Image (cartoon, rainbow, N blue to C red; front, side, top):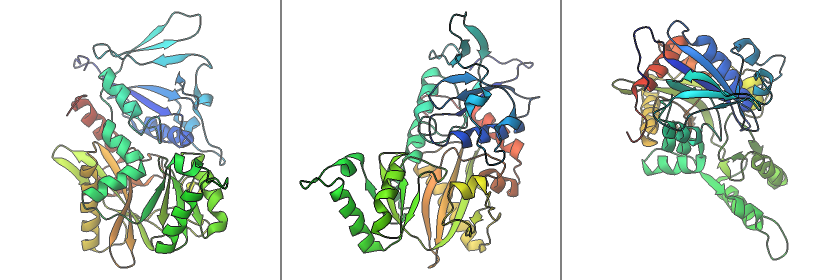
Length: 384
């Protein structure tokens, strides 16, 4: 860590955008984070990653990062140059960030003390950025390489949860080679299709077909029978060649936030995602465009609240998470909780459930940001 005097304010690089299909939501999240960071306490350097992977110096302008008239923002619109790029050091003894443009002398932007990644999906939330920051020796908000990778891949996430005895619903995985394999009669994906049909025979229709390594409800389809199956698979594969097939779990959608304190992780009050009448399920449009409102706190009994909080912390620990997690559950009609997934970098948009749950738990949005940054500054990189 760079030396800090009493007059030195820690420099925070807020990294957002990225190459995943959740690019726009990351930009929206960054706008909310930039708006909330205490500028009297921290210096801020916004760095956007374009959809083609260029690290751009961007305007520190939260107002331009919001969804306006159903139009999603992008890093390309915020970048100060169409060619210039930001370069992070890979030498742990040097934290100076450099900005380069073709034909110009590189310009030093100063040292960075901590990175606040607000990237969602592959190439940011999945351990790739975390690995880069570990090599650079720069502290960062959130989970490390392993937990980030596990939290991104719903296949291995469920395997980890199962190994720790956490309740997981029925699912099947279709890997890329399974769907691309051609049968002797020339039919593509015949074995994979049979695998799904057999799964449906055991657990019933409808099924949910989703990318294994995407979020924000991207690429998810609800399938009522064989007729829409191939189309749903191809839609999921637009986001990830590995897909997940899950059975319908009848019940209530419950979410719970986990935040790491000095004495360990604690759970927030839970929230409930009510049924969305204008949508078939809680999809991208319902979450971000039509702003389906969650109920905070969830109308649960004291026993149910305690149980879901305990399960959320157990999931946090099972995946070796750090900093923060949003854990999503189904409360089934039989009264039992099933964990659906965790998000190691949950959304921080103005309507996101994670900050709303902590607001209701007594931690304001600015305080939440500050707590995450303080924890990251105190945490070492490397094995821990």
